Image 1: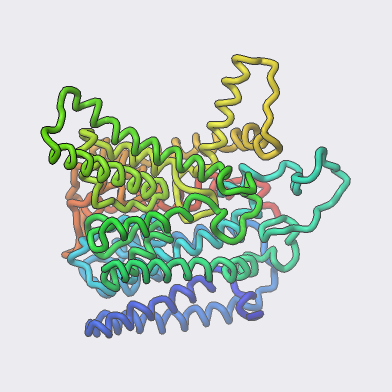
Image 2: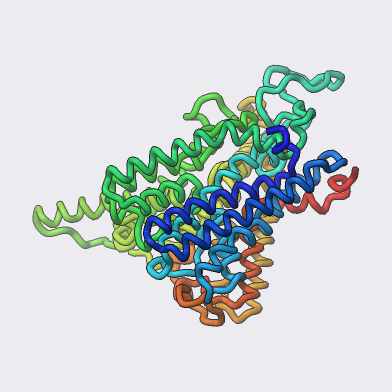
Length: 540
């Protein structure tokens, strides 16, 4: 273990990715797809040997770790590691090309879930490989949030971080002469010993997060199997839900095999993507001691209920003067109303967590509401995003909550200029420094959307399609392109298994490269990437 911790983090992650190739290889041999199985097992052996060689070459590096290696490691993980993961995928589909395979792996590793291929034309082992990569990407973000981003106060941790660099929970006034106190969580600045090395922090956090993450995945897999899903579909649903990647080997709604009961299971397992409270670590993100008062959970519940109520009430606004005839008509109306309500609630939470599952009742909810394009509401939910330091993408609920509290306080000051805002230490910090930093991030996010739309529009892509594709990439919600009808583009190809009608495969190569960069930016976050440009960040 000591030798392992001396290796660069990117080498350790490469070794883990190489070992993960064994699973689809064995699964392919079990399905008698021996060619694909040999490709994955051969690639696993090759990359394990290469990782061992790189490990031996870098284990005795003389200089110690530097802080700037953290964000560079995350950037390299999202941009370079998919090249290794794409090698067996490209060899299994010779006509797709390495660039398309690399793009597909970036989409999986960033938990975006967008695919260039038709689900019916892709072999089952490749579906399993896509799901495994997405699951590992979700695990990496859960670990990296507290092991890599929290010490740098980026990735949402800047909202709740103390301006004095230490805890203020039990002190009325800070005493600047005091040094750093003992820490109760991994990301505290007091861990400035050997844990300052990224590999040490990631391994330590991974030991805590992995059992919970894998245990929830296994539990959800078993529940879906009991409800009638097939083995591969149930496993990929479980992986896609916990990682918020939304990767599935079949097209269609989430409950097409297990029904409403299966969707209830998925709904419950989507809740951990709303707050870091459900995962180990990230103690400094707790703005309240009880779950009921958690700002992220309350914000999520309010937004999901608001969307479902709007879709439900829209029916009555557009159906004035229409009444059901007879008892049967009333029962049919009640059944349709219940189905529409569930479809709105499920899709609302699914897109808020940037997972992108669709309910079996979503089409009924659309018909009930009478809205021609309710997908725009889903795009707004995806932009809002899930919880800070979770696998979800988007702006994040805590930032939205901070801006909402700041706006509420400003309105109060207009009415009562001399009023004093209460709520305690955390509430004041959210309304002041937190709202200020949240507004900066929101402006950066909006600028990222504008730049991405501009770059995509250079390739003769319809403006509405360019906008939705940009939002889907930056929020890591690839399924958003399927929820909103887009004008298909046939300027590129992903091979015989490609699906250009779905909105991604037919894009030209330059547009795909821009969207791949947008996925990486959305996953690491613009504020963290801008830290690479700071002179203080590069100072020895």
